[in-house]
Length: 500
Image (cartoon, one colour):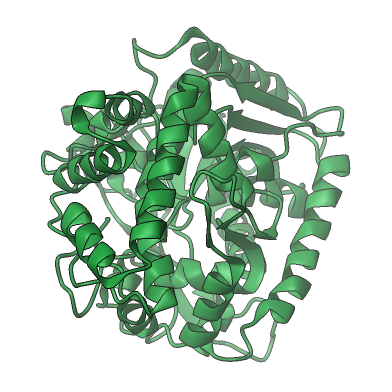
């Protein structure tokens, strides 16, 4: 029966476990849930399943799997376009088929809306487990081929309605990159694309991530970043002695005592202190939804710097410890993990029921180790987090989790291929809107100056990662509101164009 007419409507950071560290890793990318109204959040849409090929590029491989997608007909009017939101390094949810800026655009454009889950994330599980050999089918080219097949099939199965419909793809963070790449690879299928905070450039060693976070904190108040830097240096000095390590254990409530002879544990500890600070910058004041058990909306550049500037809290290290105490309280966690091998053990689990597969962390590490890099390092003395988080920490993790062949040399070759795609896009691809927030640590990998005459780049002052993609709010700064109006203007303009 016709798909459109048979639709059914249905109106981390961390763990206290010292031995298994099941939440000791937190990705620096991704996008949270939109902060929609309670009525909108509670509206459930049916999960649908699309038959995909496991390997689009091997005609002799006939294996298939079921890819999850969802559909929203609320604003669709016959003859309207089709909006497709691409899932990225997280599973799709009814929150995003209900809300977000793209749904607001859909209402104004009378669009039919789909969202398609990325292979290997969420419930879209192509293989029996996520062993390294099975993850060979997790890559950008296969994901883009999934999208192309989905558009072709949905269009042909609903030819009377969608034969001449224009498809516009949307994505945020990694999915923002996919949206732009989809327009480049399938211009005959994808009429236009909106890429929010897309990290289109591949780079293995990416110290600019923490450097941008440092700039954002310094712009708020130069003393804020200075105190964090001083606290990092003080911690490093304390960790040179056993008694000093005990002091740090107590101040930062580590899950187990820090072994000062284990350099990888120490790097893991510093990385776990750096990540939540950077995430506060990355997600600063974004209109995202947090559950009642999360209080992360209160963790902002302002709140962190207020504590780091508060002399009543003691010296820089003591203030920094209080910041992390607040972070643990906000995420309902009880201690700070740092055991490197415990994290490796969690990453190596291959069952879909395991924690790191449920959250997408193993999958994303695989993509980072094989195609993208994007390793947020800190290896200069003048950096916010000092000379403590080297590239080798990440490349060793790749080899230990996936095998010795997953090394720096192999990644260099893959990154070269990804950047060739980036350079082509910069010069040739039309009808793509690239949006970036000035505070976003990922903006350095974005396409801020496209050379194609019919693409647009919008850099938004005072906001961070994917801010434009969340639902609009009365508290939005005027420059963010203006950016969304610019997106809508170009969408309507491009929908009136008929060429590829």
